[in-house]
Image 1 (cartoon, rainbow, N blue to C red):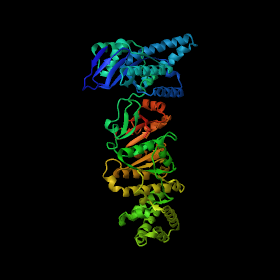
Image 2: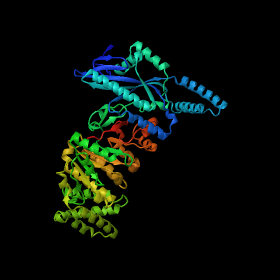
Image 3: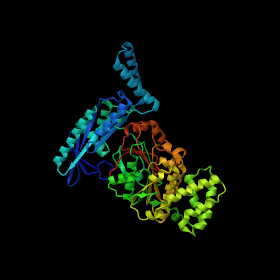
Image 4: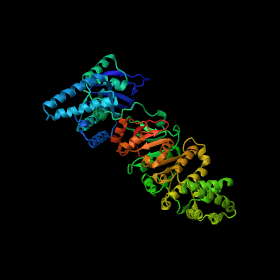
Length: 583
């Protein structure tokens, strides 16, 4: 038994004072006076399964099985040591082996083993030539840990966990063994101290030189280190704030620090059925829990009430267009009189009319400007007065278009005014727009615009004073709103950014965002990308987050339902995480 004295102010992994290094890859340390812990290191000896022999679908299945196998109910660390190899010398050796194999095949064309080896070596060589990859020698190790108030129980538990892990890996063709002797002491010094004595450095160099190693240019190495990331998202952006999940690579908890982020908006992208709605619900509930944010959900399918109840969140639903009206009359009365006509014209024209219908928009403004002067005299006949002035329009087509819009708005305005209901709602409130959706996309957009403007006016004093979002508007199935009015939601994004309102959107692909895709993503402080097996999906996203060719390949294969890639502005570097939906 040997004692290693840790330096209290060093940057070592444990930083725990006295640590005892035992035989068979074991170390013992104390987290406190009442708790003793053991760590055990096991070494990868061989990988029987060659990914080169598998099809793309088999590779995907194998890698997912590998990562699922590590979910054994206790923490598992994967440690690797890389040593660069002389590229030219390695390629020379590979080319010689290729030539020898070609000769063997020429002598015996039925030699299938030689053909398989030739195919592997050729791919290996071509990968280095094509991408300029630096080959490495690799040592791979797994580390398990167990703690208890009794030393015997902790030792028994860590050995049990190590045995279970070794058997699980063996079922996948990954052969492991316990660390022993000098090799064990060398590795323990590196992993848990951060430096080596000269003697152990010589031992390690010998291990790297003479042992049979995998190489990074080979697909085998993905089993040990699937994500080789040279740079990481800034610590202050991911170390506090709204909890999102666990970093797949480092096992660190990942947060979204809204206060450090460029803006409070969220964009969730993912194929149908991958979990966009559940992801939005997790984020909105945690936003409320972290910052006491009041959350309004634009619910087109009337599904959020049941989903939230299953999470234990009690909510009251606002049925807009049914028992609650848009309240446009009451909203307009909160606007200075000189701006009312232009304000209402903008809300209606942005949602209903196109840019080419300038004559209709000009007439709309004229009608509203004249009608609103008289509506003060008779506030109970708000829409009646507007329709009377519309009847005076000379152009029959423009009169018909405007009258149709005002008739629908009058029907949507019946019921308790929205602004009165919003004053006393629950902290998390779904706004059911399923009935308005029956009228078409234009009136959905108009209802959302009225909702956003009502929230902005009602809570202006609260949100202007805050550095974190006090109001969040969630728009699921945003593609429905984006079909014809992409500029409207972008306008709401920019407006919300200035007023401290967070807008959370979910949509199926970047194509839904159209030509304004770049503007949407650049105005989203948190980008959440859910998995897809489509390589083109990831290549398109690589325009907006720092993704290499290898990372695109890895994320296409490795991420599955429940995982995500996130990007937090202003840092373009993504973080692969396992989403945590428990709230």
